[in-house]
Length: 366
Image (cartoon, rainbow, N blue to C red; front, side, top):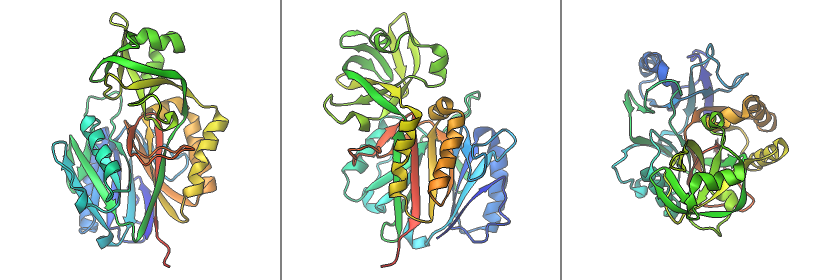
């Protein structure tokens, strides 16, 4: 399996004909991406070309995360056996027939909603689908564009792309890693509607959360600095629970708006950021599962990027130091995968404030 990350449209040194290309493009770079797509289609007429909008890209080059002058579009190019993968495009209204898919997949979605979470729950229950990693498309925070995904010439909203991969010939390993720990006792949601949390333990939600966090700083809300762990049962393993960032507060109502939908009778815990030592220790779990000569797709929450700042660069260098891996990825608005914890979960979840890494490698011949 040949693979390479290409940035700044530098395809002349690729050295092989890819069967699949995944592009991560800034929404403001759509026209530049379409122009490059026309050239790629001419040079590689039989290649599957996917894309996903991003609020920032990750490339396999120092300084890894893009600047305004550097690689606004990143391409992950891979030469995989054509009969060992398939690409599926689904709209939000479509049912996904798991019988038509390979056992493992990369999923790129242009939206985050209960529909997406329902599909992920179905994958977790289906024996046919064992592993799914991916992310929700993003946009630059200062523009009014909507997230989109791209497939063979067209942009799509309210759609999902599944790149499913045959597990007989290729390994897909990965993890979704939080840099927070759940704190305090489980708190019951007693009143909520869509993404708005009105009451916790029959008290105004904002009052209950600020009793733990202190007064919430609206600047830190803009940096996604206040995540909550959310799950259906108080007694479940909390380190496996998905995170949902607070995106707004309403002091008159005493309510909190979250990144994702929440429901009465769910439970929450406040997320407290881990120390840098514990963050690195958690990252080290990746090294235990990484196959040799891997290609990595990396999906980093925009909240992680905002909170880590320079540490994001250092973590990417740390990964390169421990694993011989080529990687490409982007800053997303929701990450998809199984959580990495001491008590592994088989559930495929939609996360927030998470680093998700998917490692692809050719299987060793027996």
